[in-house]
Length: 94
Image 1 (cartoon, rainbow, N blue to C red):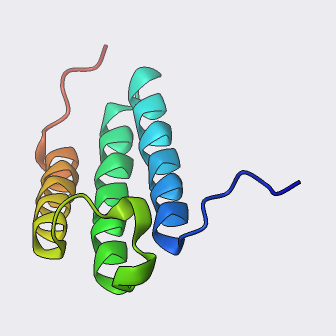
Image 2: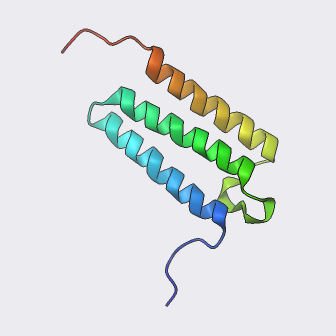
């Protein structure tokens, strides 16, 4: 019996990115929102880099639209989340 792992390299990377986003959302849920948003943003940036590096025939689930569209939006979203996690000032202690 074959393991339930996607065949294309891009789809395998996509699943790793989903794990990163899930970890980030878990951190947000337990109260560490700044670290959680940073992890989610870093996951999107890693996805953007993967979209550039992985050859077209192996891109799998990393492909949403065209390469330029995918790279532009995942980079924009990832960088925005990372910057957000850094520049928002801490609130008063609870």
